[in-house]
Length: 208
Ligand code: DX5
Ligand code: ZN
Image (cartoon, rainbow, N blue to C red; front, side, top):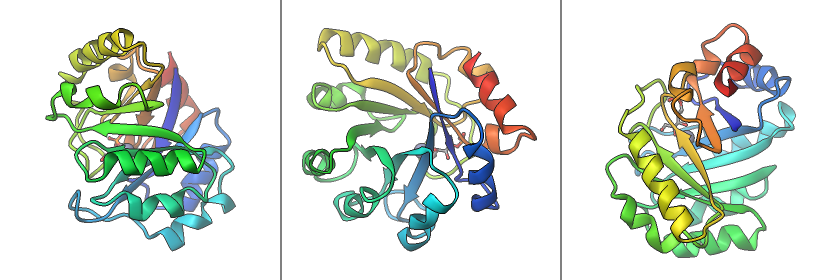
């Protein structure tokens, strides 16, 4: 199982990025919010593009924005492995196409109340499916337990479609929740890691 850490709730992003960079974490999860798709807004791209000064880890970019096409060009210029767009936004196909044109892996994310069946048209063409286990918009929320059932169902769908997409889960992930998510390929965790004293220890506990 791979781990991505989100700095969304960090009070000092440069310091936290440096601390995460010396752990064995697989990715930095970059949450991007526009104040439209979700209420909150994250730092601007002009600040975000400095991220290479603090980390050489690859990035897993999560676009929680109304119009992802406007953001893909920028985030494709960073050290990005995945760009994920929300199923509930507009021009999803076009956005996925654009991500592919940049040679970046394509992700699609689904909010907790969106039916899993809505994913069907994308199962064959994406590299990653990001199942939200909280309402997108802010860090530090509690994991929604029904996500566990959704992941089982999604795994069945992927098998049926012979899809190679990996499953990622984001929101409220801590060591206790992680034990129930052994079938997940990429776990995203924010506050659980950032609020700990020893980042490597927290990450290792998620992997156990
Ligand atoms: C929620 C974000 C998550 C979140 C993770 O909208 O997409 O990435 O910040 O943080 P925790 O682990 O605190 O829920
Ligand atoms: Zn996220």
